[in-house]
Amino acid sequence: MRKIRCLIVDDEPLALDLIEDYVLKTPFLELINKFSSPFQAIEALQNEKVDLIFLDIQMPGLSGIDFSKLLQNGPKVIFTTAYSQYALEGFKVDALDYLVKPINYQEFLKASNKALTWFNLTEQNIDQKIENSSNTSIFVKSEYKLLKVELVDILYIEGLKDYVKIYLKDQCKPILSLMSLKTLEEKLPSEQFMRVHRSFIVNLHQIARIERNRIVFGSVYIPIADSYKEQFQSFLNEKFLE
Image (cartoon, rainbow, N blue to C red; front, side):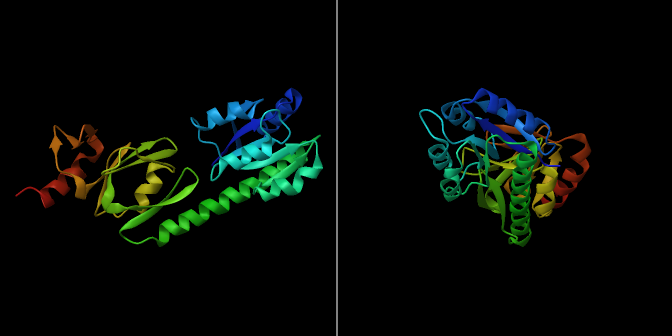
């Protein structure tokens, strides 16, 4: 089951600890960190992928409402506050839900399930768009955006546990997407892309150099694992060797 990666931001220590306890006892939530200041959370968001923030509204220096406006297309928000009059303003910034303190676990779980439904529906829509994409492109979710990637531009793809990095020609920074390498492999045309290692898929049309059982893309050397050598050699025999 895919877990929702969470932050908690609340300047009240008791509320911070209570929400932490609720997150830890909810199977589909994963706590990334908790902070008593939104400024600390801003720094963390630059280094961590976060799906959902449980966010207090009244905090010194920067309110939860103003902080949520900084997120733009970033994590979704569930507000937690002692003041019900902020509910309308909270929904104006597209919050998933609004919890009024003191919060019991049943209320917390109901809001969390609403978040789970939202993420599941979003990912189903993304999968459908991937299925409906043409033979020349795919759609991938990255940093809360849906990006169209032309297959011809892909050099290679690296798998990192639950994520993939898609490396494109003429682009230094790879696209990072929450998806397994196997899932992406199933979406790619087999006549153009081949898995050559448990952690790498290469674009066969972009291969220009091979050295000592390694495929070379600029300064990057991608090993060809023993379990994939026969398949890759068949490709070479058909396409390049007399």
